Image: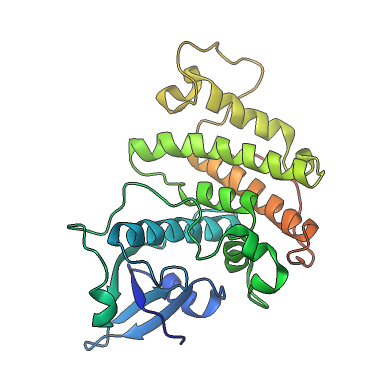
Length: 281
């Protein structure tokens, strides 16, 4: 394993997370499986993009931002939500480095904001091919994560996907709105590569999704508009959030494969580009 100054502590509660230490190939973030003195499995993450940060608030914000991008990469690549990877703390072994971190009195690992560009160099640096450092023979998830450091559309899409959650009421409200934003991002990306987005998603299915998002008479406070909406009679909107998540993540998966190939970043061999459709749970 390469040496980095800061170890990210990863919450570990499933065998699925064990596999990240071997399946995840991004050179912008590494997962490492080890054992403690009680022979319990522990997972850590390391990234060259967090070394050298001197302020704890900035460090925590960057780690959180990378965490969101990781989950977004996993969700888009799988075309479904999975167990979330949770970065819960950090540890600096080198005391000389640890002493340079300016403590801000945090009682827990938490940040009130994200860093919209959580990488060491700016985007123009990575736009130069030899600086991209893309992993070879990697799965789509880690490849998308690495591409996000030099492509605004992919980075935006992964950030949005990484915010998807379906637990408490606040999560549900956020997710309905985030899914709609993902559609906007995909449409912008399709326009950039002169692709008709309707070749990737069934138009009626997308209409059922947007009808729900835009109308408070369908999903109430979860809708992106307020006030009194007109009852929808022509179609049956999607009202189940899990159905909406599956549809839009499928859309994001199909789009990302065409987009990164068209852009010339990587080539996806024989991608499944069947049109995404609404399927009731």
